[in-house]
Structures are given as C-alpha cells and as structure tokens.
Amino acid sequence: MNTYMTVKNRIMNLCEQKKITINKLATESGVAPSTIKNILYGKSKNPGIVTIKMLCDGLGVSLIEFFSTQEFESLEQEIK
Image (cartoon, rainbow, N blue to C red):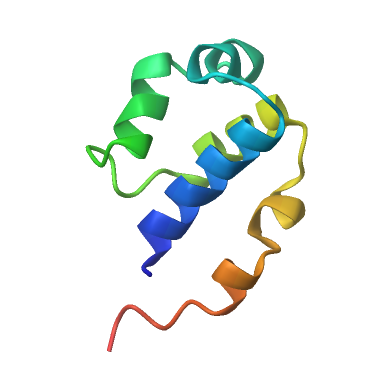
C-alpha cells in the first residue's frame, strides 16, 4: 500500500470509529467538505500536513496518534 492509500484509509477508519460523517468532520476541522472528498476519492493524492493536522483536530487525535499505526510503520520507500 502506498502513502496516499494509507492516509485515506486512516481518515476513513477514524471517521468510522468516531461515528463522524465527512460533513461533520468538515465542520469540526474547518476543512471544506470538497477538500475531504477530494482526498478520500483520489482527486487529491498529496494532502498537506496542515490539512492533515486540521483533520486530526476535528477527529480529536494528535498527529502522532494519526501516524502511529502498523500500516504507516510498514510503508516502503516510494522513491527508489
């Protein structure tokens, strides 16, 4: 799995765990719903760290918690 897919899956999993919709996440994080949808549906494959931090704030997790998963730890180098 690549970094983009791992980020996308993490956002979706956290929304599911916290029972939060994309629209609610947009309201809580201050990130436009269209931006979140672009990330989740593949139009934006390189979300910035500031956007991810805002989403983390909306989800009630820290950046460390967001990235502290087995999936992120096992990512292979993408530039070879």
